[in-house]
Length: 282
Image (cartoon, rainbow, N blue to C red; front, top):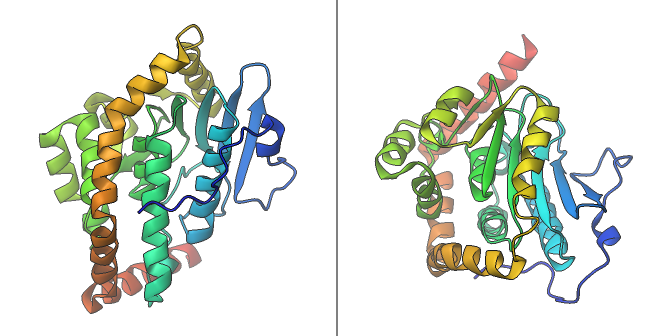
């Protein structure tokens, strides 16, 4: 079952969803353009927006609050210049507590479903590399604008993780079955240009400012479109995928825990974490 973090359906004033940019220690920063009704949600967990339990919980709550506040559109981006999101936090998977590990994968499921099923249009402004969970966040949005000279992809296989069926489906819906199979089995990371050519992203941008303009251009397409018709159509297109994930949610969580708790995976992950530490110290 999906875990609803906020249960009230009462519409909130838009201002209540905002986090001030002055709060530089906030995991998620939210800015609202009161003129357009568009919200920019910025991941802000230094140094690379690794998805730990707390960041993902805050992202789910933020999107839930915006949904109840009737925003007109959302742009998801990063406060860092080289990384959109580095994916699941390795620290969550090294010698983990099984119960917390279940919570981590469960909230990742929730985050995917929340972004994938928003009633309003969404754009991922990918202003840095987006491996694994970073690619998941981008694929969950309707439209993807990516800055040049970065990479994106589901590279879980190279780390010893299985790509879950609901994430395979999301990529398959975007670039097709054959390309998805090849990409997932190889753990392939696509350059920005390759991602555009494959249809993994929709547009390239010279920089974040240019990307923001292109993201707004997409959201503005729907200014004169019936929100009722648009939302109903989107949910008909996507709700079956969400329901399919919900049916396997518990088994999917247990499969992930089994994968991560395996001694071979743990040994490989510890070695990988050490290599990252050594690289940083050079």
